[in-house]
Amino acid sequence: MVARLVIAAPSSGAGKTTVATGLMAAFAGRGLAVSPHKVGPDYIDPGYHALATGRPGRNLDAYMCGTGLVAPLFLHGARGCDLAVVEGVMGLYDGAADQGELASTAQVAKLLKAPVVLVVDASSQSRSVAALVHGFASWDPEVRIGGVILNKVATDRHEHLLREALGESGVPVLGVLRRAPAVATPSRHLGLVPVAERQAQAVEAVAAQAEQVLAGCDMEALLALARSTPPLSAEPWVAEVGERLRAGGSGVHTRSALAERVPAPVVAVAGGAAFTFSYAEHTELLRAAGAEVVTFDPLRDEALPEGTRGLVIGGGFPEMYGEQLSANEPLRKAVAELAASGAPVAAECAGLLYLARSLDGRPMCGVLDADARMSERLTLGYRDAVAVSDSVLAPAGARLRGHEFHRTVIEPGAGPLAAWGLRQPERRVEGFVQGGVHASYVHTHWAGSPEVAARFVGHCA
Image (tube, rainbow, N blue to C red; front, side, top):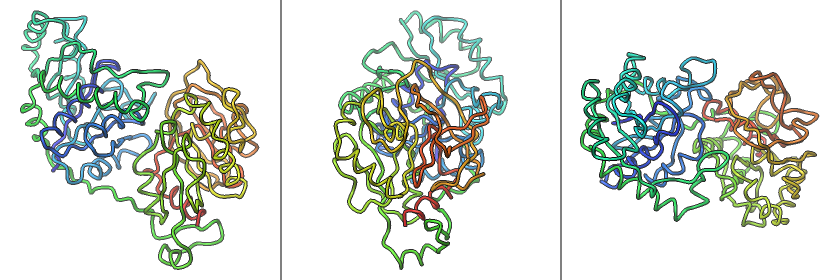
């Protein structure tokens, strides 16, 4: 059994990231092995979680991976740990649009049989806090609100009023946190600034969050609540892609037979400050499919890793590093040559922009006959996608679920062979399939479709 807590809030902006990260760091500082998790498709918060715990931050997304994989993925990440802390997304009961409770923090808490600690921004209320907490605690009887942490409390008098009101609610107060500028994390157009872009400051912020939590929360009561959880009946997820790989469309080979013919193909994965969006399970699945995964930094490295047979460029913030990316002409040329050779290239969002002809007027790799630029419009939401064209990731007609999150546009939005057909919020095709290249704005989580990794590595081999 893994002791576990879900940290949720009535809405975004209440401080659940600060509290969750602070709790992770505080418990880790006490010698516990802490497993960090995040509900939903967020890439940035898990970076802070990893900094707090020394373990990969992992996502639990019931929309992209399915409800049946939530508990197995949780147990995979929490293997060998004393405690797991799960940070929620948005408000407790907010999930995929028009999908009821699907992908909400409440649904994940129920799937994990985990108690919820509600973080409430108390800055503009006193007695009303009891009504708010009562409403959240009674809305769904299957969701167990195990306690409240009051955030942004102004004074001792304010705390007294809040505690007095909540004394009648039956929900215990497990922490009271004052306003503390030192724990703040800067934000910009897509949320928090990633750890990789502010490493030293991020370390200081996480340490301050841990100190704040230790000073204001009842750590023993929180640990006791986490340990009150029942066992989960699920088995841990395993990075397994099956025993068969498709090798470049030339036939089907078993993994052992493939290994006898060729060495493990090198798959280069973009990293560094410009490309920070990735799920830990993707690398695990690539390795399970027989690849040798090597990370490189497009901001610093002038060449792809030696022997590169395939390239994965995930999401991130290339728009913040356009000048540096453009200035690295040797790498841009190497990427273009690899793509021209027909080698498999999988690019999501930031990767799509990097493969374009230009980004905000600056030359990029020129693999795609398209130009990208920043936009005032935020594109955000889950996507139900159907593969329009055969590609290195999926055969035409395959269905995957994904997520879009960007403030950029690319023109045209789709190539002669599009990547995906999307059904909501409006019907459209998007992305590019060009030789071995699959480039799209849609982020996917391969744990829900491990055949994607198998197909990609098969083409590399």
